[in-house]
View 1 (tube, helix red, strand yellow):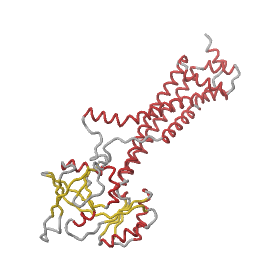
View 2 (view 1 turned 45 degrees about the vertical axis):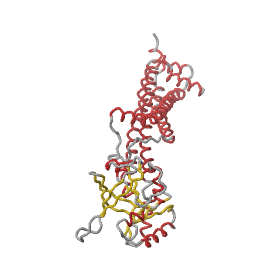
View 3 (view 1 turned 60 degrees about the horizontal axis):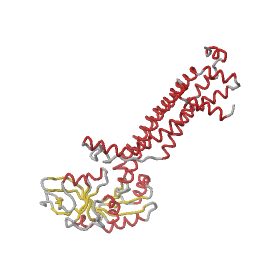
View 4 (view 1 turned 90 degrees about the horizontal axis):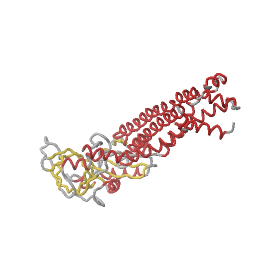
Length: 407
């Protein structure tokens, strides 16, 4: 039997509406596989979106490695020059952190004022609500979450209260009034506590000598940070403490990756169940088409021909189900942000909030590699699932099958 004849018989078994139980079971298997592939591709797109936004929006602006300690400004500049010369470091910038209270009327919130240099501000500019070329002394930029809690916006004054010395020493807190010039809306958890100001102003706002509390490093390879941290630690004196992004945000990133892997494994098992539903379907087809199989054998079809007809039928079910599943999953993933926004509008509740989740929107990143991988796995599983019915088909007794098919 020619290959095109084998394929023609297999396709007709799957698609021909007049095939009774055979066609019905084949279409049912295709439907189950389509839904399983579509759901898995849509879920993978969402998990990929969280991973991408975590990498670009959060890890793209926070320091990959930070060196902290107590030293004068000249020492910090020397440290900055030394680490900038190391391989893999693309940018360095000094920063100064101050713990303080932000006060707006009766609203008070504890915050950390981060004094940054222009190089660091450049990374935040894409999320700024106003065009701010550089932060001037006395200006401050707030995250949208912090601004919402304080009830301030661009153009409003904001009073900050910073400690100076200690109460035992008889010193009192120092109050400064800063001008809010912009808000940062990155859509991430960083917006809940972000407060940025000019580096030199922050360092000297209490009248102290201007110095830094640390130097921030950006690397060419983000995921090299844990390894490179130990290299930098060996090259600095014990007076400095070196940390990397994995210390503060690593658990969140690892949780997203782990969730993606677990969801993939769970939904892949659903695809496996849908694919191996082909076994039961084709076994019933063998029982329903005993006379057809016997007639083919009397007309000269070999056992290999019968086996290949059922294998091709299983593969064709996989091709149709996986192809429609990939198409449906791609469309579903593309529509998820719109559907989420519609649900939020209908119920009046924000589904994602940075008080709980790392992002306040539903990200989607549909990848062709995932679609191709799902399609290939589905087709292979369906092909493997057809082996058992194919072997069962060649054991159909010809004489008995022909006799039972006579009216």
